[in-house]
Image (tube, helix red, strand yellow):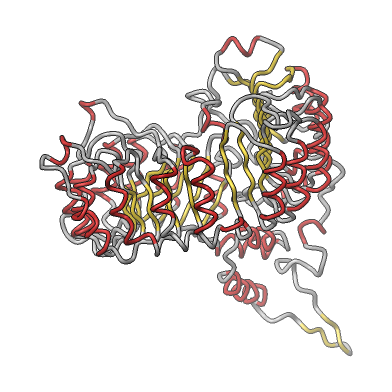
Length: 603
């Protein structure tokens, strides 16, 4: 198995684990020719024995390494590593970025021991439903063992991206001390750290180019808050991107303004809600070269400004000077009178994120009518149908949705007719995630299940790889998904289905399915066991508040001993019941983890 496997391809170890698969040499040799590491055969011609050239195998591997350096796609590299042992070794030596989609799928020692030359690590931890508070606090996914191992194995490490991991201040301090060339840290949906850890990174990583903190839980007690912005070098910095929207405490604005001024390469800046619109203007004046801007609160904050209210014309002049802006976000709290100030940059925007702004259609329309080049747009439902019609009329790259590749839509009500229309006008969709808020919501006009709408999506959108379904849905829609969703790799199900047949359809029909997450649906042991043949090929299965029993989960664990089967609830007492509240099933090269909390049982 390629340790960086993200679940989108069947790997070497999975093939060996699968029922009916042997460990024949053809599975490792690629089925053609001998392995480059096998002894080269001699040849006898007219009584003379020809010996192979000395070091020929080494020469071939060196040539192969030079070729593999140009192979960037993870999926292509995974495929190359399965050709034969020689390719396996050469690919490992030339892999510069290590991607691990589940921190428990492989141990740090095994991953770092194989990929010895990696300079970047992308590591994911908790299941995605942790974003909805469905994974108990303290479940796991600690970064500590990884950074401790990397400090020894990877002194040349340059970049780390973590998602849904628990990262402590001590982890960040160790990372900052251990890698002299470190330059890029991105933390997404992580927890466990605060401003002391950020201060260590700012002070010790002298070549830092990227510090992006995205949707993390960063909160300190008042007595623990550290002025981390002041810890950056006092000389010119290499910063290209700084994002701290999720840091919930105020920052030293004077230090932030000085940092921006001495960072000539800064292109992306996203500030938190404690930065007022007046302070934002000062930062923009200091950095007119910005291409991506997160605005913070976008209203006056008297305690922060310490001055008279900012005039709209002054703010507008800062946007006029920012001729390179292509991405605008933030708007945590919006004073409507300041919205006209962004008009000068609207024509050049390709991304506009208003997902935190409770704007109305009347407030949105003057902005959106000038955004002719938008390709990505986030907005709350407060804009209503009138606001969306203005978007469709103005934004030619979104108009009619014909060019859309991804839709994420949260709403209170929906109709089959509307979803069918989306399917006909968005046939290039790769991602379709429709979240109808509430349980078992039918077509709000006809009262019928939403089966035909989602069925049309999988029928008409042939490129679809990720699908999220919700609303009142029956077994019929899952039959549609199994029949037509042949490329679907990630499926999210909420409050849907009416029998185990739904799950059976999906597990038997969606052969490329890698990630399946289900909550509050009537699927039990029969549905779970119907996927026995497929679980070795999947990255994970998550089931929450379904109708599973401990007996059914144990049977899966017994029949598939190479999978890790975790059952748990919100409290220890949940483990004493035969009813299983949460099931997390995933494949791993190293077996059960060794940091299991008391409320988790591994079968």
